[in-house]
Length: 475
Image (cartoon, rainbow, N blue to C red; front, side, top):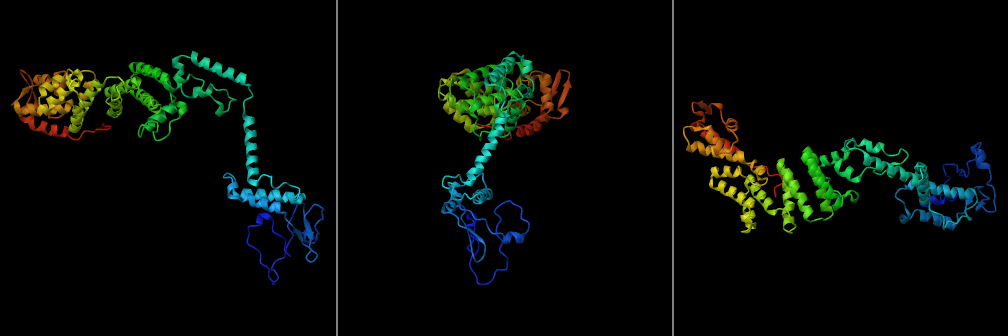
């Protein structure tokens, strides 16, 4: 009779008996780590009898047979139940541990003494061993400072950071890391700098680089969930706004200021803050974007402002309505202009800024370039920044019209006054940017434009200027 298979081999295919002699010599499995002198000695050695061992001798074959207790077999079956499997422990590791546990119990004669029903499964043993190793490693790396002493050290660092001059606080991001005690592990390190200064006034280079890179898509990866630990409450955001206004006046660094305004807008959106302060943030950012010619950021702010104005949260809705009309004139979006006009009430049309924008629209619709450039020189608020974007286009149209009416020539001084140039030199330079130099001639009574020859030139330039306008971020 062959030796009974161990429990961990119970899932193997059944062995079928055969009358034919096997082509191999069965050898007794080793049950200990003792050194064997030879295979023949091992084969001839009789198993040691023990009162507690379940081994019995076969009188015919001389082979030992192990009668595995039912509790052991049930223990093995539980080890392979899918509900008891642990993802971090592989099946191979579990089987090796199972074999080790049962083999040790068999060698020590404890198969009937072990409480197999309450014994942890092999995968649980492996997980417990790993947790012990991790716990011991963490405890060894903890700082030797007492809690009170550690708090004193951090408090000293905070006071030291407050006493530093602003120039020193603007140093590289590595200075913050050098201030930390060396024996504090990374996950215990805290930001010893003033949180408001570190997150608003003096952002680290790494964080700033991350935000600037993400501008090519959306700020701060809007597809990802914002970190609640970095969202600033309303009182902090108010202080930040005051700081940004000062930095803009002193440094005029649009890249940094725009990045910080977008961060503020995101914090306001995450916290669902919609009040007069929110309107103020979007209005200031829109004005700065207009000043720098950033239509993309301006339109994002304008879109949000339109929704905020509908809730009567304050601000300057008529000022930005005028900007909206001028922007649609720039993009030549007649449908949007008509929609904007439909939203105006009779009282809105009396507002100076809105009335000016409507007059600009009317002058262009009638082809009255004389009135248009008078309005251009007297634009309220920051509307001139928007009109600067399409004034050259209208100057070319006006020059094409002048060349048809005033022939054969016209004084450059007349063009300067009619088209809103600051000087004759600026007017001449603009003409030479679009026409050959020989079309300007200096005569006794001043420099003159040969309108009879320049008409076709400015017609072509006018058609080129009135092509499709880039409407990035249009509302």
